[in-house]
Image (cartoon, rainbow, N blue to C red; front, side, top):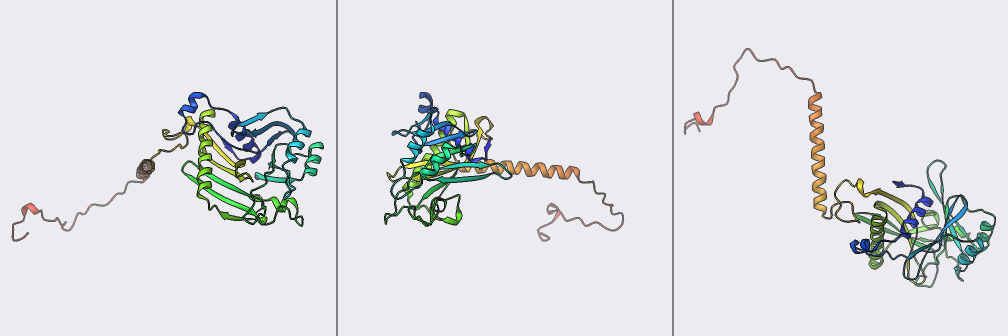
Length: 317
């Protein structure tokens, strides 16, 4: 099961994160109950709001199904601070040709107009804009952390916008774009080892959660995170979400988080054995398909035979 489309992958991921583990699963799990902070997220299907996901104070993902446009406008518009006029944004997938992701930002007035006149894309995720934490100089620039996670690999990149959020000389899109607008953003390495380890643990806990609630093994996922003004790390949306069922794992599971053996040496030894068997089968196939060579025998002349060591005396030896 490979989720290429961003909006549908995000909707699927939020639905799985909303499910809870049983008591036995929490005891068997290494990470216990999932604790995750997410902004207010509304999933649109066929241009209608179906699900509203949010997180409680203790980090539990909750869901509601009854909502109205007035309630959405009231909740999403209150997050705008004095340094930002961005209220929300939509993450939609363009299915014409190669799959592409379209991210559009809205001010409170634009959001009210889009909701009242049904201008939200058919399949999209409407999410509250979280004002990022200020820099050392007190300036607000939109920035996110993008984590590329695999069972034995995790890389985190920080992207920051070039412009200030309150600089009205530029449009909202130019002030808010990060990973979706490379012209208006810059890439920086993540310098905090604490944030790096914390996001890695969150990715591991998400993979562990999906293993127990849906019997899925996460092969790869690319998640976007943001640090808000209260220094909370929030999960925004995903750009890649690839899973397989646990019955399709090609090696016995040692851990719910990884589908490979816990010891890397065992994994490398297993790969070497597979490679040797593959090369041996290929050589045998080539030998079987090769025609027999007929070498003419020598009928004239003397044939040199090397002397045997057993027939040689000490002087000759």
